[in-house]
Image (cartoon, rainbow, N blue to C red):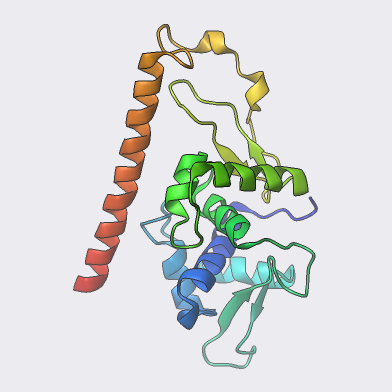
Amino acid sequence: MELVLGPLEARVIGCLIEKEISTPDQYPLSLNALVNACNQKSNRDPVLELGELEIRAVVDELVRKRLVVNTAGFNARVPRYQHRFCNTEFGDLKFNAQELGVVCELLLRGPQTPGELRSRTNRLCQFDDVTQVDAVLNRLIEQGPYVVKLAREPGKRESRFAHLFSGEVTGAALEQGLDARAQPEGTAQGSPLHDRLASLEEEVSLLRDQVAALTARLDAMTA
């Protein structure tokens, strides 16, 4: 792909896509709202503390690349920013709702498993089960490729997937390159201990997401 986003550009584009879907009445975003979205403590990995000047510089570069537009006009007192990353008449990149939800989550949180993507995209799109996520990921691999499947980590049940909009994933070994002999004894894929550990790790990850979401809601109510 010719499109290559820097890490902060990916964060800004991901935030604009997320807010376009989840809070359309507040979209396009002001610069202040975009800064808050980029620094949001829930649904972000890593959590960042970026200043207005940093985000403005990133937005200016995205405007130069024609991936973001100021819909309020450059003379407006409060600029409002909208992405042109995909699904516009200005480019060929087109995604359906499920594909866009997956791409958005990968931009915001980095590599994730199909199970994680299913639970974390519920505010953006609908998946009935993880097999639908697998199908979407396979389409994104075939069409672009826009995502890549990473090697399964020891003790994990599922492989993670990463987006390729920031170029090749540094140091990422594809699944066929994984040497099963590197796994600790007793944790080989398919063993009871392996499956139990993988299940517990997934449950912990989902519980962390739920706690983060509840914390964000409580912070919003008490603000």
